[in-house]
Image 1: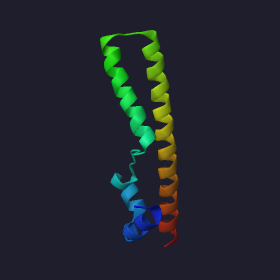
Image 2 (image 1 turned 90 degrees about the vertical axis):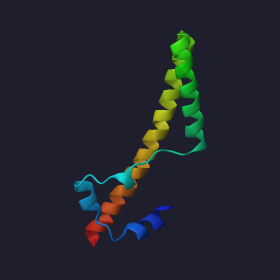
Image 3 (image 1 turned 90 degrees about the horizontal axis):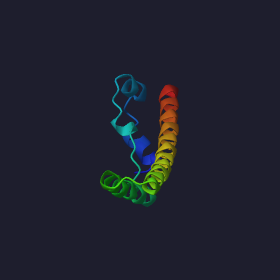
Image 4 (image 1 turned 60 degrees about the vertical axis):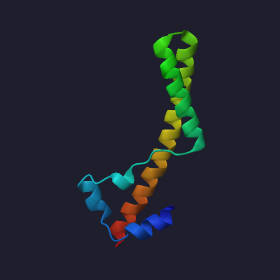
Length: 94
């Protein structure tokens, strides 16, 4: 669902009230991008290997992959935060 469809679907809901009452289900986002899923699989694989066989190279790869995944998550959260701010502004203008 794109942002415009979301606004139409949820326009009758009071965004400020939802934030106040901590009803944040529609404000949460987990990336479903192909890149994010690939990095997550690599991290899980390395986590299993690290538990079996601790090596410096594996730790470096683990840190590299987790930093990359965190970067993707941060970008997605920024986009979500921006969309949420727009919703709040639109709600305040009603």
